[in-house]
Length: 120
Image (tube, rainbow, N blue to C red; front, side, top):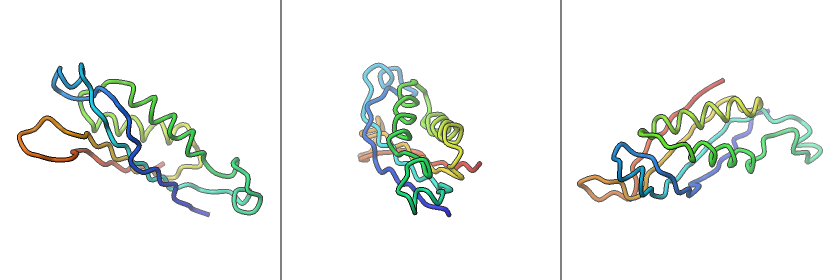
C-alpha cells in the first residue's frame, strides 16, 4: 500500500549560493520532503518500523547533503532526492523543495527556492 511521508520545512543552516559571500556566511534553508512510500503490512498491522521508512533517517540524509556546499539549489535538491531513493528502497517517488531564506536579490522575498520530483 502506498503512503506519503511528509517532512515540512526543516530549518537547516548551510552555505549554498553563487555569490562567494553566500557560501562564506551562509543562511537558513527550509527543506520539505514528500515521499511516496510502499509501506508493508507489518507497519500497518504490527506497528513495525521495518515496514516503512523512518523519517528520522530521512532527515539524516537531508542534513548530510545540506552540509555539501553547492552553487545551485537545483544541485542540492537533486542530490537529496537521489540519496533518498538510493538509501530507502521503499520510496517510490520523492519531491524535494529547498528554499533559501532572505535571498540576496533586489526585491523582498521571505524565501526563494526550487522543487523537484524524482521517481524510481
